[in-house]
Structures are given as structure tokens and as C-alpha cells.
Image (tube, rainbow, N blue to C red; front, side, top):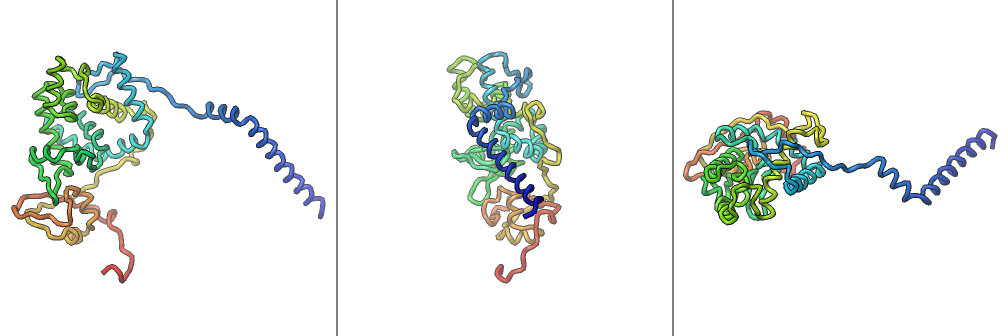
Length: 318
């Protein structure tokens, strides 16, 4: 074996022994070193509170220590559940423009779009109590306000119609209470339930009322989500416009008769069943029964090429 190879082997052995020595030294004092590295590289910060927190131009008394704690709780929960709040930013860019137009038409303050956000995260979900859609409308409430809710059609999942129902409810609540903050609170606990609390406690200020744990958090959740989404840079959220979701252009197809097979209907419009249900989540089964000749509007995306993909060649599909 020549001298060059021996010198290379010696260098390798020296490096290995050095690493073993360093590792051994680190292991002997690992707790101390680990704590030092952790403290140097990682930090969880408390939040600087905004001074002008409010909802629908109604002031939130954040100078109160008790109110400060309730705001602080919601700020910390939303700031440090980063993945969930980042999805709020992404989905709101997609759906808020639709909601905002309907709120404006009904003279509802724009801040109520954040109520829909905290209710559902802007997802078409069912709650354990049976509330459904972006606005989490109960079955009975939906029917009371004119929505069709049955095995085949559930218009609580129709964004435009459910937003209109929310507006009708909120206008009724505002007429009752004279306060948008109380109208928002009543969306959680009901108008009659809130009226009883106001009467029994002798105050009509939301921030004075002793309410259930859910309703006592409710307005604070809206306030905080509004604050974070309107001031992302203050709370560490960094994203590009291209990172946000957008709502694609759609054609509106008017229907006034039964569609026996929605799959075939979708194919006739050059999309598939999945895409049809995605854009029309209020369709709950594979048909659209319409014996009474009611008028429905189905959304069909214009840019089909980006949503429907080529099938693999197979003899097993048919």
C-alpha cells in the first residue's frame, strides 16, 4: 500500500475520531447545549394588541382587562394555529367577493363576511347539531326562510341563497336589538334566547352580558379573524397573491324540469359528475327531481380543460 493511500486513510480515521469526540462531548452536556440552541433559534411571542378593534363600526372596549383577556385568547388561538388561519386567507379570496355583493345589496355591514368564516371556515360542512353550509343554517331555519331542504336538494349549500337567508335573519335581528354586535351574537344563540338574557340581566351591551361559553366567545372570534385578515403583516402571515384561491368563471344554466341522471347531464356539458357536484353542492343525490317545475340555476365552469382530465385507455370502464 503506497504512502498516498495511507495518508488518506489516516485523514479519514482522524475525521471519524474527531466527530466521535465531539458527539461524545455533546452527549455529556446535551441538555445544556440543547437548551442553548433552542433558546437561540426558537421563540413564541405574545401579541401586541390593536387599539381600534371593532365590529360593524361598534367599539370593542379593549382597555378593560377582562375584555383584553378574551381578545388575547382568540388572537393566540388564531395566530398560532397557522395552517388553519392561512386557509382562511386563501378561501376568503375565493368566496368573499360573492358574499360581499349580497351583504351590500341587503345593507348588511361588510364585517359580517367574517361571521361566515368563523362559522364554517368557508367550507360546506355539517355541524354535529345539523347546521349546514357556509352560514351553518339549521334545517328548520332554512325552511322558515324559504330554502328547499330535502333528501335531493339542500339549498343551505347554495352560497348565494344561504347568504340571502343570513342577511334576512341579520336584518331582523338588527331591527330587534339596534346593534350589529348583538345581531351577530343572536346568530349564535337565537333572537329569543338573547332577548331573555338582556331582559334578565338588565343590559343590552354584548360586552356586559353573561352568556354561554360559546356565545361569549362568538363576537371575539369574529373581531380577531377580521383583525388578522385585514392586517396579516402584523401577525406574521406572509403569502403572495398567486398563493390565494380564486373562483373560476361559470356559465349559469337555468333548469325548470327534472334531470334524471346528473352524470349524463354533466357529460353533456363537457364536465364530469365530480365537477358538477363541486360547483353545485346543494345537489345531494344523483338526480334533480322537479315535478313542480321550480326554477334552478346550475353553475358550469367555463374553463373545462383545467378541470377535466383524460381517462386512461381501458376495457374495464364499460
